[in-house]
Image (cartoon, rainbow over all chains, first blue to last red; front, side, top):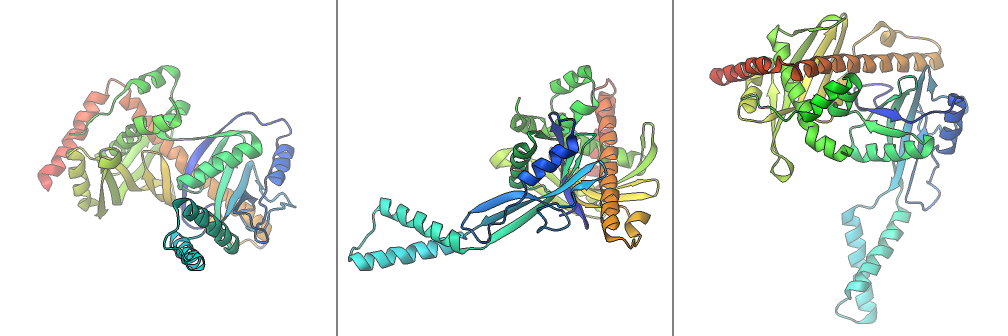
Length: 201
Length: 182
């Protein structure tokens, strides 16, 4: 969210690596290959892929709706089946009680407890609905820069991996020191690397 | 050095930039001259976050209020806290942005874009409307980045130059004045 309307929070990345000459054909092919795959009717734990920023259910891009002037505008959709810790705890304890009664035993061993937890977790995950998260991006092709509309570090890590998988290109977050590399010459950059924190007291 | 090390070791560069920018904006009543561009308005307002220490001993101080009440934040700087986030208003020509800059990582948060004719216009063709509006918004996001990078370059030129020692004396004087006022 943020690219299309309302207030926005974002971080900036540089895009490192070469795009082939047939840039837009390549992007089209790769976006289609790594677009979002719905998991509502499966038991998969999660799914990640590209969707249109205008519609989270548009992941076929029939009209190339990600191309916007010299920009690629996409949303990264991440659906994940989650089970809250409290629910997991409740059903694990319930199952432990059932087994104790059934086998007429006072206690359950550590190994079996762990097995029960894994089994119950897997059953609950299958029963839960995938929760979607959507994050917009705008990729400036001529400048090789990208705005990602989230300051969530987990989402940024997912983006870096999915972008690399899709396009074979690396994203470098433009923190101040890295930004400086783009606006200073070599000698100035050397001086910047040598400075230490100053005090304003 | 990998990115994680750079983030922790060089975080101070962004924080010093934000502190310098605050002082710079007050030096000439909110007006800052950018090379090849002229004067723009930079105003620090309402909300600031200062921090002190690293890792588990990290402490945060949030200051809210009108401009004059941000003296508390300057007092924070005078006892060694670092300015990590600030709500800033930037005006360039007819355009006005309002945003929170998280300095350590250069994150732009809660960005309110200028109102422009293109954003207000009601275009009949929905598809064109979407593409036009998105391009307009991207232009305004990138314009804000260009201005902030211009200010950052201004800071780096001073910070790496021989003039820094004089500049930091002025900043120390400004920080000290706030202590006297509180």
